[in-house]
Image 1 (cartoon, rainbow, N blue to C red):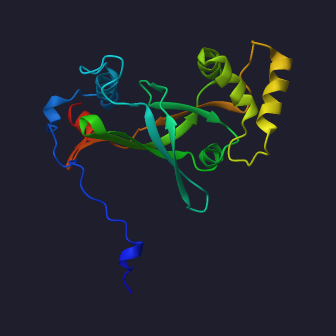
Image 2 (tube, rainbow, N blue to C red):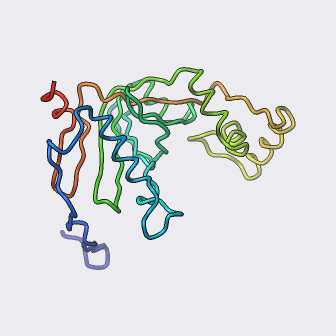
Amino acid sequence: MPPSDSTKLRVTSHNQYQSPSRLSPDSVLPDPLDQFREWFKAAAAPAETDPSKSVVREPEAMAVSTCSSDGVPSTRFVLLKQADSKGFVFYTNYTSRKSKELLANPVASIALYWREVHRQVRAVGRVEQVDAQESDEYFASRPLGSRMGAWASPQSNVVQEGEVDNRLAEIEEKFGNQIPRPEFWGGWRIIPQDNPVVCTIVSDILDLQGRARAGR
């Protein structure tokens, strides 16, 4: 029996099919990660209408999908913190669900959606933990409150009322302003080797990895 009208959520178009441009293999750089960095710089550049804001509101927002050992997928948004010659880096608690799934099944898919420029980028690849020195350097660059929060907020766990505040007080008493990186917190790198980095503008899809292979 089809659902009744009272249970339907009707979703209408918001002009997302009106693409301002098209992609061409000849218009991109040979290396897909180099091309991604160029696209990201453009998305993060100051907007002409309001230089205090970027062209894309939060270009670093990235969906990461992992899969459990028995094949159950899960997806959440994280913040992309680096795109280097190897791949895409984000940081998290190593005791979280996503980290446990990456340890058991070290592959992931990512997607970034940039509504303002009608573009999404996605990739699939194997993952590796970022080395401790790199994680230390990034952790030291975070604001004090964020560093304290990494210690006080256990991910993928239910906390009782007031528990986080109590932990924050304990951490402040123990470390003061010199908060070290906890061993259970660090980075993951998604390496899109042997898999495409794909950019989509509406229905216009460009396989950047295929472009890179063809250019070699």
